[in-house]
Image (tube, rainbow, N blue to C red):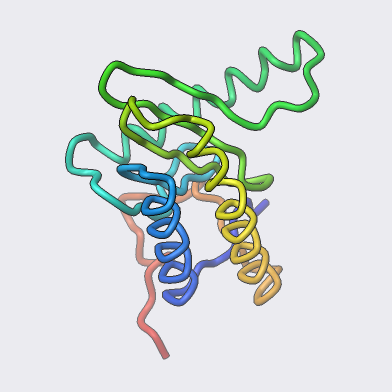
Length: 159
């Protein structure tokens, strides 16, 4: 069963613009859009200080573990995980049924400010993903079943 829509160049460009605007407004360093399976979809900002692919996998695991814990204590309104650090902090927020947004920001930046600017960005990102779904609802992707040794079925030449 597909978990993600097929994203075209125009979708990725729009997502990159939305994420870059979030970084500027929220005084954040980097943002990653990931699927809940831990796969990196796109990124914005300065990601040279860490491995985005590894961070995507670990952030997804952290979010899903915390979501499970929230369920155990009957918390129904769980939508984010906040990691405060001495130098950098991280906020992982639920975008939709299939995606998360990971935001890295300086520790001196208020998490409240990041949340404030993230809320409209997440709504716009979810909107762009919905547009992609509606464009071709029967041909989504499930990244967890991809054969990474042979990605030819995923990458095709534009017609």
